[in-house]
Image 1 (cartoon, rainbow, N blue to C red):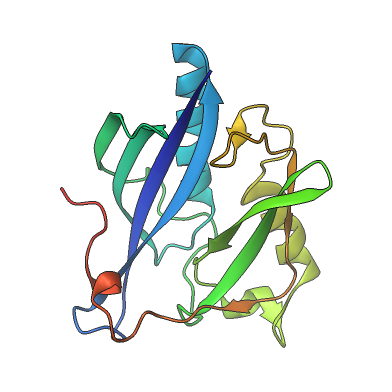
Image 2: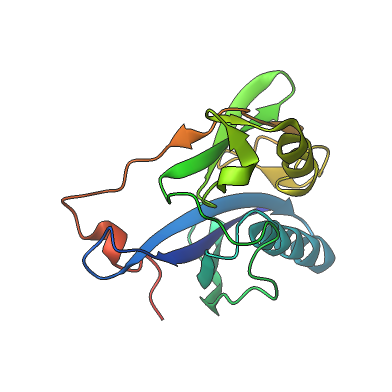
Length: 184
């Protein structure tokens, strides 16, 4: 069984950084023993990347490596077929979602979803029941995938969206956020 690591790089236009574009990556891991299992994991991760964001967020680059050896499997442009599942966002890019990843009852990771959270999705920093339910079922449905894992190969058995809107501090004072992590 091989573990694959997929880096999906995103960008969003903003006047909060000098270059006018802010970059970040979401990292996913999955196990595969056959080409079909690899393809299924790849498609699931890419589709999840498309469904987790608002239209303001743009896909930029993708890189997949065998983990932990770093053997390159795929690298190139990442242009999702849909820009986002949740429409445009009028919320600040510092408002994010937090999704806890579980193996049984134990938290083995998390995803900070920088969608950004639209104003219609929360009241006083708490997600509305409708948005919470919709996002929990559509945004990052990792439960029972039988192939998603963490970087140590621990299989994910489920996830839980935190109902609070979380703050995310931009990396002011560094150029890391203004530069691509994955280059063309």
